[in-house]
Structures are given as C-alpha cells and as structure tokens.
Image 1 (cartoon, rainbow, N blue to C red):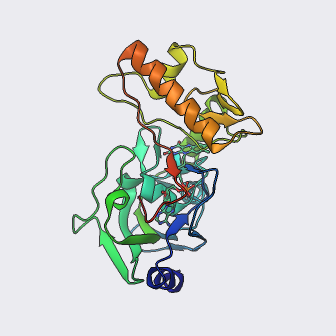
Image 2: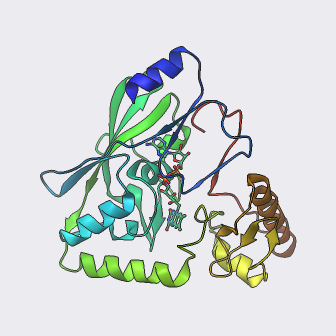
Length: 264
Ligand SMILES: Cc1cc2nc3c(=O)[nH]c(=O)nc-3n(C[C@H](O)[C@H](O)[C@H](O)COP(=O)(O)OP(=O)(O)OC[C@H]3O[C@@H](n4cnc5c(N)ncnc54)[C@H](O)[C@@H]3O)c2cc1C
C-alpha cells in the first residue's frame, strides 16, 4: 500500500482508501482518481489483552472473535459491516460503546508513504462521537493497523450475541444501505432515527431511494437508486426536520465527490 501511495503522490493522482464501503456514497460519475481497496488482513493476539489487527480485517469478525475468546470491549462491533480501518476512521460505535474507547495505538501511512504509530499513552488519539483524529489529519493516506486493549470477561460472548440480536430486530441489515445517514443531534434531542420516525418520514422516497420502514436513519436503495436520488432525499429529510423541529441534522455518511482530492 505504501508503494502505491508513494506512486500516486509522485504522479499527483488523487487517492481514496476504501474499507468495505459501508458508510460512503460515491458520486454518480465515479471517482476521478485511484481507489485503494484496503485488504491488510491479519489478527495478532499480543500480551496484556492486546489485539493487533490489520485495517482490512472485518470489524464484525474482530468483535465476534474477541468475544468468543472471552474479551470484552468489542462486542458492539458484531454486526458493523465495515473494516477495522473504517471503524477507527469513523469512530464507529453502538450500544453506548465506541471504537476509540478500546484503541491503544494506530499505525498509519502518510501520503509520502512513510509509516507512523500514534498511541493513546502519548495523548495522540482524541475521540468524540463518530469523530476520530484521522478525519482531519494533515498528510494521512491510510490507517494500516490498530491495536485494541480489551479486558477479560466471562459474559462477553453472551453480550455480543444480545447486541447482534437487537441489531437484527431493529435495523434493515439485509437491505442495500450505507448505515446510519445522520449523526444523532445530541443536546437532549431524540436520536436522528427517532426524529424522522416521529415526523412520519419512514417510507418517504425519491427515485430508488427510500427512508427505511424498519429504521428511519437508514436510506435504502430499493434497486435503482442513484447517488443523486440519495442526496436529494437527504436534503428533503433535513429540510423537513429543520422546519418542524428546528433541529439541524448532519450527515454521518461520507459523500465522495467525483473531484475529491485527498482524505476528507
Ligand atoms: C447495516 C449497517 C449497519 C451499520 N451499523 C453501524 C453502527 O452500529 N455503528 C456505526 O458507527 N456505524 C455503522 N455502520 C456504518 C459503517 O459500517 C461504519 O462506519 C464502518 O466503520 C465503516 O467501515 P468501512 O470499512 O466500510 O469504511 P468505508 O465506508 O469504506 O469508509 C468510511 C470512511 O473511512 C475511511 N477509511 C476506511 N478505511 C480506511 C483506512 N484504512 N485508512 C484511512 N481511511 C479509511 C474512508 O476513506 C471513508 O472516508 C453501519 C453500516 C451498515 C450498512
């Protein structure tokens, strides 16, 4: 990956690192550059409850594996259909837990192709709701691995299965979606999904894009949705929510424009 990144940097070719694409929306014209599909896949159990995983490992896989081995901290990852790199970049979370809670260190490659490790102990990893230090990091090209610090627990597997079950009941996990579209507004407001539900927006559709009937914060591609359909539906939903509740919704999903020039 470092070799490809160095080449693209030298040739001034824009790059976009893709995990499983479970939270991105590409422009209908595609991406005018090089999409690097991250498949750095390995899992190394270390000492002191540490697990080092390649950024291309399925986050779901890591969540299930660690819970099965009797470690707590990543049960919430089960059912999140992204990669470790995507989860670190997005600070993915569920059931009151976030990726950043259990990250000990992150290995990255810069646009020039050099490697660097950022650690919790050195205060280099500051997280907040769906926000990681990598989203604004100057010169970042790719996350290549992350090390997680977990704790031993007798009921981790049970908790992981409960989380997975609740996900099956409440989310359209077999539909074509890109996960939750809006960040929760916070400040004592209901979740984005609950707000949309209260306003009767479930089922609202534009072209092939539809607000999920199962969970209103998911937009479903019913078969023929274009990126434009999804974007128009997002704008329509935001407009209606603002008109009725004064709440300004912001996207969690990441739109990748045709002329995107670096990690944004
Ligand atoms: C059914 C469903 C359920 C979901 N449930 C949840 C949930 O409960 N909680 C939650 O937080 N999210 C959820 N998501 C959203 C999504 O799965 C997560 O955000 C996930 O972490 C994204 O990982 P990914 O590998 O697919 O990233 P992608 O969608 O491929 O990329 C997302 C962003 O991360 C960047 N990125 C990815 N990998 C790297 C890397 N190695 N280096 C640098 N940048 C990188 C990309 O450039 C992009 O900007 C859900 C999605 C779906 C479809």
